Image 1 (cartoon, helix red, strand yellow):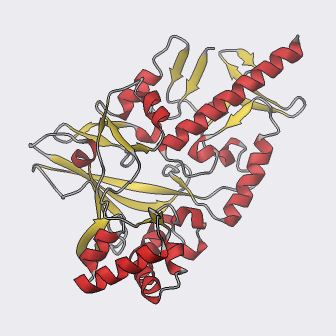
Image 2 (cartoon, helix red, strand yellow; image 1 turned 120 degrees about the horizontal axis):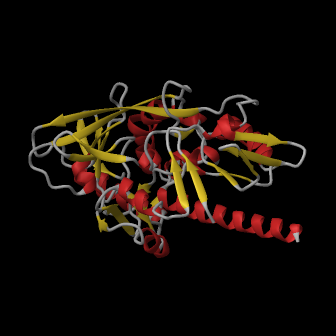
Image 3 (tube, one colour; image 1 turned 45 degrees about the vertical axis):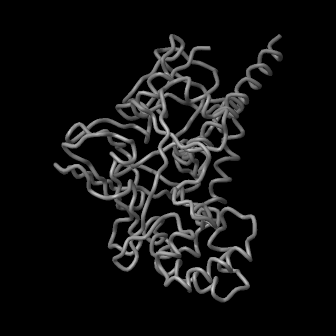
Length: 370
């Protein structure tokens, strides 16, 4: 089938768009990305469109003006506490969570061991609470547990920031990956165009009509923007968090020891990223970092990055999801469309799911026409 992709921005690849800046350093213009998954078939799929190289990501966190290993795990405990206290705490964690690889902060807080609970409260006070307040604009206890639970405590000495089986980065960058993904005579890409201007909702037959070049199409429509804006925010606007990302170039080989350093206690910003260490680039002439300042999304001012997952917002999303489901040829997906925090591998799984739904819809429509 022929597909028309309408992109509002002046480039493809969405928030994974990357390019070279500074001293010819490759950076991710909307914040850092790395690919990780436990699914071999997903790795096989992405390798059809790009060359990838293995790259385990490491990170650190600054607490009380001192750097420690991330993720929070046994290495962090050994760095933070005196030797005997660290070993005793690790022993209690091993006894309480035998065979577990990672646990949430909530599991630590609900521990039967006072020392474990005290440790968890320290992490909340010095990291989880202040980081969540900056990142999401609301206290940790107002967030859905699934969001906070994404950052788990590692019950091991594994110092990789992500502990999934496959960790990769594209040799030529993510934009090049998307270029090859879209390289087909059946795919047309139109940039700097707002698709909403060409859609019309027809309540009479529960379809979305697409108007293009003087022709009306009754075809499958996939929308990956904010679901509330698709319907003119008629039930109210869904809250999102945005980012102000400030890039700085330096004429030196290295800025920091690891790709990511989190700053939960710093004023305003949450982390600093050095891209050479994230992408595996070798360039001794310079380096580029980005400093991330979370802020509230305001339409027309900045971009929606993260849905703010909590009960009231999910209730509002459900109203929009129910409305979207009334239109049989409309398929809403993506982080903004599903109002869900997706990692890359989960986004690929979701895309495959939507493709199957489109096939089922077309088969049903063809059957009814016959």
